[in-house]
Amino acid sequence: MSTTVEKIKAIEDEMAKTQKNKATSFHLGQLKAKLAKLRRELVTPSSSGGGAGIGFDCVSVGFPSVGKSTLLNLLTGTHSEAAAYEFTTLTTVPGCVMYNGAKIQMLDLPGIIQGAKDGKGRGRQVIAVAKQCNLIFIVLDVNKPLTDKKIIEQELEGFGIRINKQPPNIVFRKKDKGGISVTSTVPLTHLDAEEIRAVTTEYKISSADIAFRCDATVDDLIDVIEEKSRRYIPVIYALNKIDAISIEELDLLYRIPNSAPISSERGWNVDELLELMWEKLDLRRVYTKPKGQTPDYTQPVVLRSNACAVEDFCKAIHKSIIDSFKIAIVYGSSVKHQPQRVGLSHVLEDEDVVTIVKK
Ligand SMILES: Nc1nc2c(ncn2[C@@H]2O[C@H](COP(=O)(O)OP(=O)(O)OP(=O)(O)O)[C@@H](O)[C@H]2O)c(=O)[nH]1
Ligand SMILES: [K+]
Ligand SMILES: [Mg+2]
Image (cartoon, rainbow, N blue to C red; front, side, top):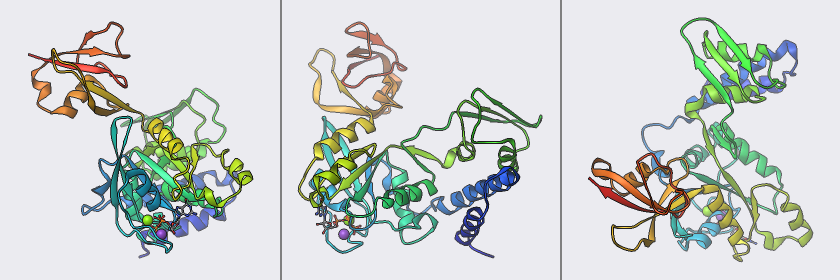
C-alpha cells in the first residue's frame, strides 16, 4: 500500500503529463477531485495538538530566515530568537500588538519548506496553525527570487487555505434523487459538462442541484464540495529586507497587490504594514457605556465584521448577559437616531457605544 503522500505524488505526475482538451476533461476533473480528497486526508489534524493557533489574529509564514521573527519582535516587542541561520525558530512564539485600541495577537512560526503541504519537514503543523488564524503575513525576502511567493501560496492552497478570495458563488444542493441538474447565470468558459460529471462521480454524488453564479473553474467546484475543509483567509505580503535593495527595485515591488515593502531590521514602513493589517482584519471596536456613566474608551470589545451583532457583543462580555438582556441603547454610525434602542440582532459598527439594559 502506498502512503497518502505517494498517492498525491502519483496523481500530480499524472496531471502534469495530461494535456487539457475535450477528450481528457473527465480524466483531469477526476484527478483533481481525487487530489483534493487525498489532501484533506493528509491535513485533517489529529486529535492531539493543532489547536494552538485558535484565538490568534495574525501569523507569519515564510521560508527560513526571511525575517519572520525579526518582524514579530519589532511589531510586538516580544523576544523571539532571530539569527542568520535557518530554522532558528522551532516552536510557535506568541506576541501581541496594540493597534487602534485593539489588542491583536500574533504568532511567530518556524520556517516552512517547499513540499510542506505534502508532509515535508514540520511544515504541516505550521500551516495547520496558520489555517486557524484570521490573517496571514506571508513574509518574503526581497533579495530572493519572487518565485518564492508562488511556492508559499501553493503550499497554503494545498492545505485548503484560500488567500484573498471569497468562496466561489456556487450553490450546491445535494438531493436524494433526480440526477445532477446544472444551471448557470453566467457563461461557463472554464468548465465543461464532463469535468462536472467527473467531480460529482468521484464524490459519489448522484443527485444534486448545482447553480453557478460565477464563471467557475473545476477547482472552484471542488472547493464548494469540500467547503468544510476550506478556509478563506486574507493575506498580506510583507516584502522584507528592503534596506538591501535599490530604489529602482523598490519601485517594482510596489506593484504587488496586498503587499507592504518593509525592513524589519530597520523598522522601515511598519506603519503601512499595520494599516493594511487593520484593514484586512476588519475589526469593530465597540465601547461599553454603563448606564448613567461615561463610555469606557480604554477597553473596547473587539468584534469581527462577520459576528458583530449586539448578541455577539453581549457574548463577548459574558455569556450570561443574554439571559437578562432587555434592550441595548446604541450611539454611533450603526444607528439613525442618537441614541437608538435596538435588539440582539442589530449589527454594530466600528466605534459604536453600547449600553445594555437588563430585564
Ligand atoms: N538586511 C536585513 N536583514 C534582516 C531583516 N530582517 C531580518 N534580517 C536578518 O535575517 C536573518 C534571519 O532573521 P530571522 O528573523 O531569524 O528570520 P526567520 O524568518 O524568523 O527565520 P527562521 O526562524 O529560521 O525561519 C537575521 O540575520 C536577521 O538579522 C531586514 O529587514 N533587513
Ligand atoms: K533565521
Ligand atoms: Mg524565526
